[in-house]
Length: 181
Image (tube, rainbow, N blue to C red; front, side, top):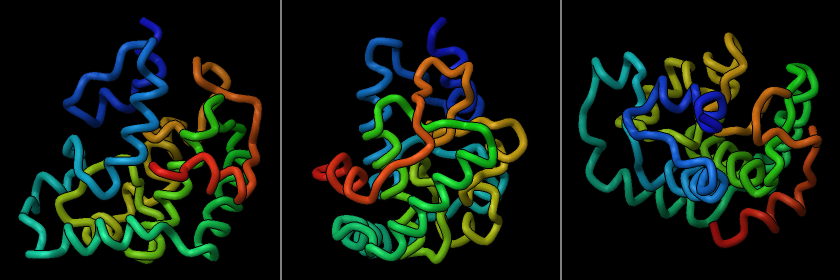
């Protein structure tokens, strides 16, 4: 199936089935925009399974309020530059739909603002601070570093059906493409 290769990391780390091929791009944009602050499938990380607990009262509201205001320009630029440099160093490319790239970079910058580290924005975490400390899902995450499998579709290999030709994106593109997400 078309999605099998594209969503191999998704199926390995998530109990939610991948979207169908004709809805894959819109589903990815929506997931990228929503999962960082709004919840979603539980990660299969060992720390989440071993230390599952409810977040402190009001913590979810605080994170959502901070995320709603958007990332600082400084961290947006830091994560944009990091993404470009890592794509070049790893021989990967951004998604053909640059709105996916924009939303993921924005989510990484928001986590850098709120958590101090670029925690993967495409996953749900019971305890984001614990996940930041473990480092497993800090970008680039362990699956990306070890197997070039990017759950967020930020860094794609040549054999991915959604790979684009670009390894660069401007700050203006990020702001424009992620506006309203």
